Length: 478
Image (cartoon, rainbow, N blue to C red; front, side, top):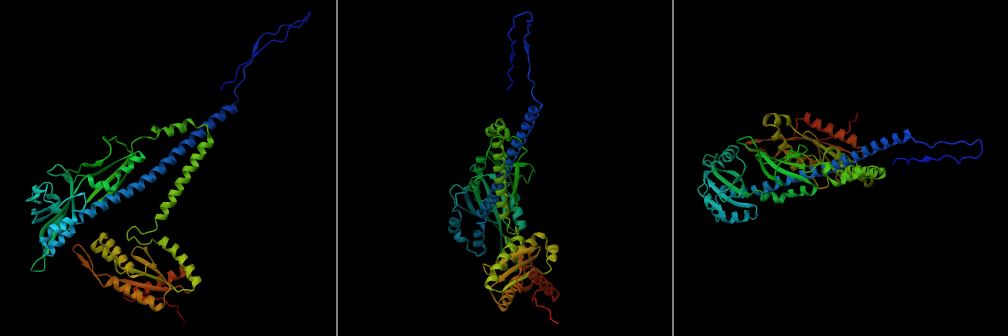
């Protein structure tokens, strides 16, 4: 507000010869420099706080959206995979020579609205389909000759595993996905021969209803599900919740792995930050520094709380789904304190897979990952539910056991060694044997670091002793 301009009036005119007249004068009050500087500093400070508030809010929103994207991609993959994997039941009918029960099994399989039909295709030609009503046109369909199915049929036969095809338009105009599973049966020469296909067809995009993709709309975001067309290499849009693409480059995207297909879920805001009324109101309310500080602190606190939650979620190894090393050590220290109070025996059992590098080099890292998963599954099934089991690093694992004697822990460890080595590891056409070496250490002084070091030394002693054995660490005596 500009300062008011005041007029200065002349003093009263004195009487007498010495009278003087004072002319009318206008005096201007100048704006202090400190006020101008304070105005610009205050404006800049408010602008900074407002921009920080909007940026923090966007980051919090982005974290929430990323979490929802993560959940939705897993829902899409799990839902479609579970529905298509029902073809395994049909495959079992053929391998057990029980095709007469097709209708009974098919009725139990097609128990979900999203499943359109299930069928048999000996030598690739459809002979049975359920339900028959509305699917008569599929009888006689040749998977190898029909352009819609031929590529996936050949791929399924070549790979010997379930393959996802589609989405494509059915004869009745419905969009659908098809899971095509090859079936091999034993021949007289003990070699498996190709019998044909079993298939499960699911309605699309109805199957996406289980994934609740519309949740993004509540946050003001749009979504689109797409994949690369395997024939043309072009981007193929599978599902979206908007009428046209705005070419928004501020999107978040995550792949969806479904058997042989890789889809992508892309999410992006439909409005820019300046189109939200609350942000405009915040800009106009920039002079209120206290409110701006409040919003910044509140949003920063929300962001820190959410980051803390996500850090707590990161307690398991993403490959084997057992404890990771950091969380394992945190839990061990708590259990050691409890064991100290109750004077319980505690042990570390450390083991790693023998010649694991050779497995990776020979069969590839994907098979190596499967071995790690299967080993952890076997071990987890044999230890007690309250024993702590973690992936310590690479192919090395560690177990914390308490409350049993040394004889019992040695017996348990020997069972674990046998569990790892007694059964072959079979993946597709790959079959091989593997083993593990185990080292045991007792927590004599309840010192976690020393005990882990001792178990590691025992493990390497087992390696030196020829592998696939158990070594208990003992204090050296002169």
